[in-house]
Image (tube, rainbow, N blue to C red; front, top):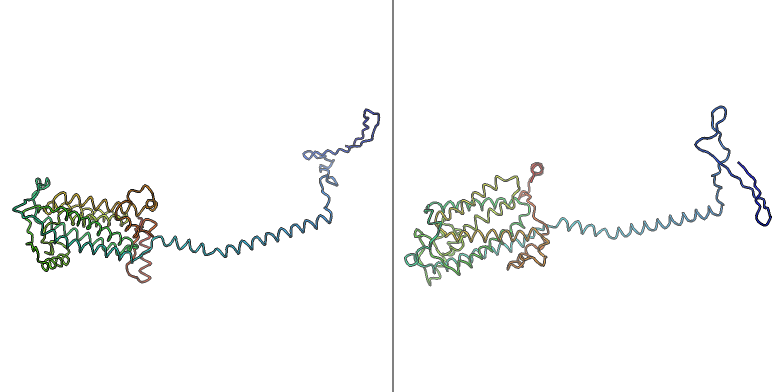
Length: 381
C-alpha cells in the first residue's frame, strides 16, 4: 500500500513527505482464481552486489589469512618434530618401572651368605658358654607342663621346612621378576639371622630338656672349632644331617624363621586362584612350628619371638616396598628402622608393586610359548 501525507508543522510550512509501506503476509499469500499463489517479481530483501573494490579487498584478506594459517601449521609441525624425543623418554620410563638389576640381587645374596656363616661362628662361640645340665636345669615352660615330648616331632619340623624351602625355590625360578623378589628374600634372611645372632649372644639360655645331647666343649682348641663351623655349614645346620650337635642357639628359633618366612613369600607371590597351594603351605608351616615345641627343642619364648620378628620385619619391608609415596613421607615412622638405607638402595628404582607373573626360566620353542600364553591368559588372578 502506498500513502501520501502532508504534514504541517507549527510554523505553517508544509513539507511534502511521501512514505512507501509494503506489507506481506507469508502465511496467507494471495490466491488467484486457479488456486496458485501469486509470486512477486522482486523480493525486498534481495541485496545488491558489492562494489568491485570491496570484492578485491575481501579476496586479499582471505589470501592473507590462509597464508597465516599455513605458517602456523608449519611452525607447529616443526616444533612437534623437534620434540619427538620426549615421547620416547616417557615410554621407556613407563616400561622400566621394574628393572631387574641383578647386581643388587648379588649384593643381597652375599649379605645373606655372610650373615649365615657368621651365625655358625657365633653358635660355636655360644656353645662354650652353655651351662651344664646338672648345674642349670631347664627353665620352667608352660607348654612343656601340659604337653609331653614326642621324639620324632622335631624331624617333622625339619622335613616340613625343607619342603617349604624347596617349593619356594621352584616358585621363585618361575616368577618373571625373580631378581627383585630374590633380593628381598636374601635381605630378609640376612636381617633376621642377624637379629638372632644378637639375641642368642647377649642371653645364653640353658638347654630346654635333659634329653638334649650337646657336643663336648673345646675351650681353646681353635682348630676343632673351625672344623665344627665347617661341619655345621656343610650340613645346613640341621639335625637330620647330624651336623647340629651344639647347644646355646635357642633365643630365638631359626627353624621358626625358616618355616614362617618361606610361607610368607609363597603366599605373597602366588596368584589367588592357587588358594589350595597356599593352604597346603600354611599347614606345613604351622605344623612345623608346633612340632618344635612338641619335640621340646626350643622354649616357647624362642618360638614366639622368632614368629614376631619374622612376620613384622616381612610386613614392614613390603609395606614400604608396595607404597611408593610412603618412602618420602615426612611422618613415615617405618623409615626410622636401621635398615632403611639398605632398603633405599635395593628398592630405589622399583616404583610399583611387583605383580605375580610367571614365566619360563629358560627359552622355549615358539609352539610351546604360544600354548603357554593361551593357558596363562585363561587364568584369572
